[in-house]
Each structure stands twice: as structure tokens, then as C-alpha cells.
Image 1 (cartoon, rainbow, N blue to C red):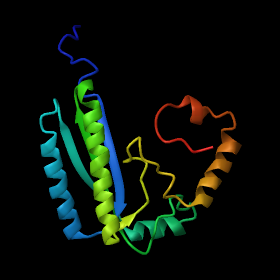
Image 2 (cartoon, rainbow, N blue to C red; image 1 turned 180 degrees about the vertical axis):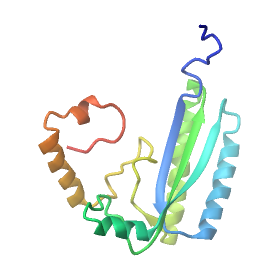
Image 3 (cartoon, rainbow, N blue to C red; image 1 turned 135 degrees about the horizontal axis):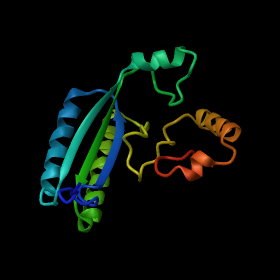
Image 4 (cartoon, rainbow, N blue to C red; image 1 turned 90 degrees about the horizontal axis):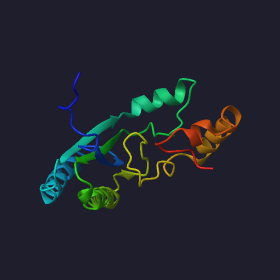
Length: 174
């Protein structure tokens, strides 16, 4: 069996995420799409560019269920208002473009968040599954919930297997 037709592992293995949360606002979302599209045009020459702009809904009703189902709402998500998690995911091919694309992504994410802050639409909640490695998802979580997770970690993972031997992802702060 020959594997000569397969591309090397380094091809398209680069990706940068950026994410924030906002209150629903159709005009703002349309503006964000226009801003994102114009920003993508600025880096259109990057080899293997694969940009995406994703919207995920966080309905208030789902957060009400989480607060009343006996399991809990570790995120402390607001159940009085719905939210939208917006995310950019940008892929590219070459190491020579790493700094350019990563900087572009961070600046775009910061710009969109600042626009929401100015309009009173932003929240500080950052969903770990959509966040960039330069973002801090713990900031938007209730302190008491983070402390509870630390107690659970101490009880069930005292040796730190999942903290120190499991690579990647966001680790619970010490």
C-alpha cells in the first residue's frame, strides 16, 4: 500500500481561533460580517487561507434549564437574556505567515469586542471551545464556580493527571 498521494502533515495544520459573546443585535451582526469580510480581504494573499465566521446561539431558555436541572450552570450563564457566541477560525499553510495571521486574528477579535462594548452589547463570557489560546475563559466565569471546580479537581485528580499529562486546552488555574 502506497501513501505517496497524501499531503504532508504540515499542510493546513495552522489554525487560529478568536471568540467573544454578545447580546443579539441584527444590525451589529451584519456590521460584523462586513468588517470580517473586509479584514479577510487584507490577508487574501496568505497561502491556503481558510477563514470562517461562525455564530452560535446561547438562548436564555437553555440557561434556565441549566440552572434548574439539578446539575448546575458552571458558566454562570445569564438566563434573563439570550446571547450569541461569535467566533473566527482562520486556517493557513505556511509558517512564514504565522505572525501575520495570528496578529490579524487577535486584532480583529479585539476590534469586534470593542465595538460591542461601546454599544453595551458585550459580555465577558468566553466559551472555551471557541476561544483562542491567547484568551482567558476563566475571567467570565463566577469565581465561586471556579473555586468549586478546584475543589473537585483536588478530590478526584490530586495527582494532576488531567492537568499536567493531558496536553492542550485550557487548564483550571492553580
